Each structure stands twice: as C-alpha cells, then as structure tokens.
Image (cartoon, rainbow, N blue to C red; front, side, top):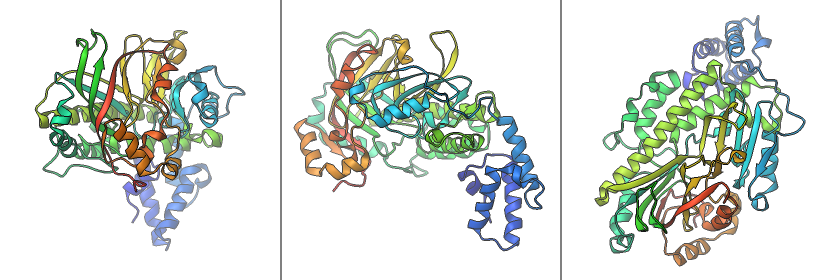
Length: 474
C-alpha cells in the first residue's frame, strides 16, 4: 500500500491531497497495478490534474489539486526577461563561465529585481554558489538551497593555542566524541543533546514540521558531510577589537561549519518540488529556480519552515561548541556566527522591500560581523561588513571551489593532500580528497577581491580539523 511518507517524498504537499491520493492508490491496487505503476499514474495527476477531471478514479483528487494550486498560483508569468537585471561581479577573473551564465539566467527571472556575484562563486544548482538574488514578492526554495541555514560559528577562548600541541589527544578526542559527522548521522536515544529550540511552538505549525521535530531531536549537535567541519585553531588579532571585546593577541578558537541537517533538507525538497509543479512553463535552464509567492499558503509555510530551520541550525552549532568546550574544560569569551544559505526580507537601495537570497554568501551589512573560512589547511577570516548596496550587503562565504568534487578526486592524491596540510602544521581527522585544499581557490585572492565589501578584523588558522570520512580518500 502506498504510504503518505512515500507520497510526500515524491513532492506531494501535506494535507487533504495526500489522503485522496492514498484512496486513489488503493483503487488502482485493487485493479491489479503494482506500486511503480500506481506512483507513475499519481505523478501524472500531480503534474496535470486538469486532464483527470471526470476520471472515475481521480476526479476528487484532481479537483483538490486544482483548488490547492489555484490558491498557490503565482501572480508572475513564467516567461523570462529578455535581459538580466543589472548585477555586479566581484573577482570576475577567478569565476568560471558556467557560474556567470547561471547568474545571468537567475537575473532574468520575472521576479528578480537585483543581484550580485561574490568572488568565491562557482556552479551550483539553479543559483550559483556565491550568488545573491533579490526577488519581488516571492521566495525560491532552491536559491536558499537544500542545506537551509548552513552557517559558521567561531568561539574564542582566553587560552594560548599552544595547548593544542601540548594536549593533542585531549583536543582531538573532544572533536571525535562530542559531535557526529556524515549524512544521516544522529545520536542514540541516550546520547541526545538538549536545547530550547526543541520546544519552539513552530514545530507544531503543520504536518511536515511535526514530523521533523523528531529528526531535530536526533540530530541536534551533529555535523553533516562534504565541506562541513569542526576545527580547533589559532585566532590572531593584530589590534584590539571593540566588537569582540578582545585585546590584540593570539587566542585559542573553535570554528564550525554546518547547517540544519535533515530538517532543512526535507523542507527544501518538499517545497522545491511543489514550486516546480506550479511553474510548468519555466525554462529548463532555470527549472531549479521555481518560486513560491510570499502571500500564498505554500510560500508562508516554506518561510516558516526556513526560519525554524535557521533557529535549529544556530542551536546545532551552539550545542556542538558547548559540548566540545565542556569536554576540554573551557568557557568562551567571545563568538561570531552567521548564516550563508538563507533568505531575508530586506530594503533595497530604492526603498523597496525584497527577498534577498544568499546562496553561499555572507551577510555584510554595515558593521555586521561574519566568518569567511579558507580550507582545511588555509586561513579563514573574521570580517566586518561595509554595507555596500551594490553587493546587496553581501560578501563571499568562503574561498570557493576551483575543482568540482569528481575533478578533485581524479587529480589530487592522498599524498598531495597530506603533504599540503602537514607543511602547514594541520592535523586532519577525516575529510575526503574532494575537500583537499588544492580543490579550493586562493583565500587571499578571494579576500582581496572584496575589500570594498568587508574589513578583516582577525585571522583564523586551523590546527586540528574534524570532517566526515568521504569517498576517494585512498
């Protein structure tokens, strides 16, 4: 029997339609169709319910889908603009043509009003990584991404980083024991962490979030795969920082990079599929940029889910830092954190409110602090935003890839990777060849390309890096 979970994973929206689809599936099963045939037929109804009005099996389902889609239907036509809205590019010489083409296409959406491309940009899905897109009255789930609220957190301690060499095992074990890495990783029932985010009333707002509340409980305080990490390192302040409340000097610090785990992934997938179903005429090259109107039921649901995923991601980092620091007997004296896969309601230069999507881009409003990491062996930077309107008050979110994952695995050997990190005094626990430092752009060049966007206030150098074990590390 087809389950509601199966249907939701295939893009069916929570609510009455799922129940009606299950009734139709039961009827088709009684007529001798197998599961794959039933799902194929239901997919056809979801894609074009108008065709199935009057059908003996699907009339009620088709009618409900049409009613639902009418409520969520966009006020904007699917046709692209003849030319993209104006946007600026930082560090153009270091950005591949494919990323610029993706940004051009995104800027031709009928809902687009402004954009910017950061110097770490590279090809993504729909919107390039490092792309910033402002839209009018609509949100694009895939322009936020499947890892909603992927973010950075830096904790600083009143301790010399020399202790990392003196008590290496203690600090390595804290990383190994106090978080888990990898897709789908979670805590056992007796290991789970606690945080007030699990009591947020928004988990009860609608069915998908109610279901994801349990996923959040399992994964709170865990890290993902790919480029996600938790690392000990050295923070250098060349002069006093009033924002951090710290004097000039060198400090022990802990830096993490991850997002909302399975919570954000499922919210992104469900609402991206629904957005796609509402825009059948959208050109294939921007298929991943289908949108939801902000005043539609689906748009409001997605926005609520996105913001909850953001709160969960922030709590996730907080818990990781709390538990790792507790394991080594430290208490933080300052911290910096920021999202870089998210959407915000912001005022543009002309006074219009827009939805600003930052896909792999850091908020850089006037005086806003953020963290821009390098690689597992290269420095990262704490920066202060300058609030440049032309960049939509944004900056890069890292060094950015210069090699795709397959290209990195095919061209970088373990010996090359290990020699690079050892020469820089870094110990790497996990991490695949696709995350080797040689797969990334030069962080110094990326920072130099955005001096008009941010001021550097501190430098972070990794020393002990924990990542997921990945394929290709041979």
